[in-house]
Image (cartoon, rainbow, N blue to C red; front, side, top):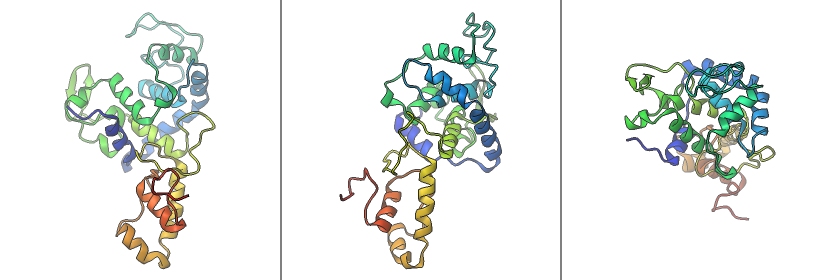
Length: 267
């Protein structure tokens, strides 16, 4: 049985590297989500507790490639009664109403539990733990990046083909791409600025990518060559959107202090 801890999901999420041949497909998946972003936001805003709008987007993408004529319960039309499992539901007056109905059938956490790792774990549980039982990363989450290769695929309920390859962008890859683009995951008005130390590597973001690029521009200055070699060796600071220990170390080297949230920081 493969690891299913939150740290497992954090570790894979923070190291996502989209495969070159998948870049166009991931870009199209992101574009489809963003085309319907306001619809997802309306569905989330009308729910009784805080829910990131990306939850509706991911479910919609995985179920029916963000087709606004189809709902997230089973991919059938939202203006018709369902015939697939769950059968006999609907029709609904709008896509948003169908999405809230789907949401009412799930357990929701307290607001502070909403993290990418928690969401990805729940999504895999919803889709099925067959890959975990085989010791494989689920392509439902990771198809399109290095973590989703060689996993095979369930081609039908209970039917696993080790040579099959998923053609769909995984939910984890899609969420990573949305966050890397700057789509905030969490309550509005709580942007993660200034850049804070992220010990788990879960909160990747466009602002961190930009910050790391700026750090690297300074770290390549000839005057810092010796110091950079001592602290970083031959490996440059990765621009991976994760404000972890190495990013904090680079901040210290340049500014004289670590990132906010780093226990080593001096006031």
